[in-house]
Amino acid sequence: MKKLTIPPINVIVKMIDTPNHDVSRWKGNCYHVACQIVKEDVLMTECRVVYGHYLGPISSDGFFKDRIGMPFVQHGWIELNNGDVIDPTRWVFENKKPYIALIEKDNVVMEEYDEGGNKWKEETTNPPPEYCEDGKTYPFSKKDFDAIDGRTYILGLLGYHGKRKEIKKISLDQIFWLANLSTQTLGIYAITVYDYIHRMGLLAFVPMDNQLKVIGERCRQFNDTCKTNG
Image (tube, rainbow, N blue to C red; front, side, top):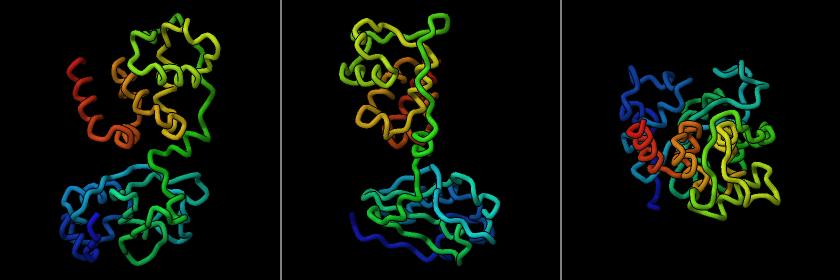
């Protein structure tokens, strides 16, 4: 990746057409600001907008002082192609003079950024629901599933051990549970899980931030297909 050049913040407010060129308008609008910076190619490098949870310190006399003590604050930022983070509004949490934060991927501060709120999902996920024959069910046999190893992994997550070959269907609430697992839990099978959920016409169950993280531009194609198939 070419050397990153970050324009001065007083230039960025003009580049993204901030009302009255007033940087204080960025407070509480973190995701929109990040989107505009990427849209206007302010950084002139490959990057993407990220939405998730901010887990870092919050100033007791700042804009978000009422969020102190909460497990997280919803937040938006930018991730560069090399994994570094650009946070245009970190200063709002810190109650500092406005600046554009550049956080390298190996910096311990990266632990304060939780894309898609996946750390929260891991900590609060309930056990998998049991199969319900009375509700809506979906095919889950080998012939209905593209990746057999992914199918096996999913059945393991759902608590099926030793009788996987007999499983031919799963229920709607089981799919919803799978769709809302953290990407860490899904691991290398995340795209396999999302592909299956898409083929069942239920991709809307998967949080958009995780769709973007795992399948990027493909999620937009998936959503277009789902709308077409209505």
